[in-house]
Length: 448
Ligand SMILES: *Cc1c(COP(=O)(O)O)cnc(C)c1O
Image 1 (cartoon, rainbow, N blue to C red):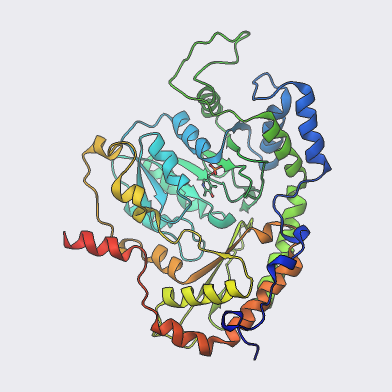
Image 2: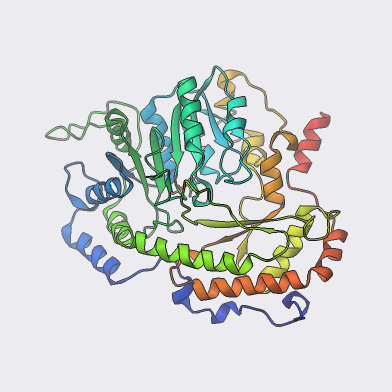
């Protein structure tokens, strides 16, 4: 049995020797260089609403790609969420359901519009918001559901559509991680009333920096998004009149970002196809590992594989007495030592992040609008979110590269090696004192 790198054995993957062509992201080709030069030469550097230019071209191409009638490009994915909510005209103090497990932007976009985020537990299979848990949290103040297609897998949109219709709620998709993924034959970005995408450099459709896209089938929502994108000015008039129709800031996309994203969009389908093959091959080689639960993809949808989350089961690994979080810490350490680029993605659920616990930033608003005192969330309020965080490992980035097949197989090899050494690792996991990051807050507030 090979000695683990964490105990002085040789590493499975020497990160310094992994060819950059296999793991770099995003991939920049001559097309991107040319597109930037084209923008510099054109002298047109930002969004315009006249239908010409890189920004308008990106909007047309993205609308066509996802199958949405309208698309507006904006400055980033977080601004996209704010603008979608602004366009819907939801009043300050209204509640919006957001998943307890997501990138913080999903909830912060709502707070920026003075909406109160109500955190909902997730589904153990899709890792997206649970429709059943969401239903329980609807109140007379609820106005919207923000569903995140987490890690690139579409959420249960039929159930959310039904729920939204029953209660007259806006259904918004945060599709920042799911470019190109589809649900029952329709791409994300067409599954709710309005959808937001990020073009951040780490996403599946990256630009050379920051960007975002908003799609909808509703012409009125689209018109308002565009109004809110630039100071509330109506730019469909023949001449700009510098009169603001609504209070709004500046969330325009620059032409260089749009031109770069268009080049990436040209290759999105090809990269996605390669990713499907590479990720599947890696999972195939992991299929036999005892207690390892690979991500499930329900038959009615496709996965964009933005993040790979693998759960594990201490019972099936022969150590039912070990806390999953303790085992995760040791597996994480052992795999990192072997050269696997695991990341600690979102170890603290949103309700327990300091910003939301302390309501820091806007002097206690938007919560103060409703006179709602801080709630002490209990771990039992989010049983699936907390369980999933404790018993899973996440891989980001490398697999986005379409040439990452060989290095992903090396990652699988490292996992096999670590699993072969479970006998040495489990006693260590048993001896570490593990407390989940949220335990300190739940106890403290529980006693008060
Ligand atoms: C990245 C991301 C965002 C925010 O996008 P930015 O372009 O970085 O502002 C929002 N939601 C989710 C789920 C994300 O992953």
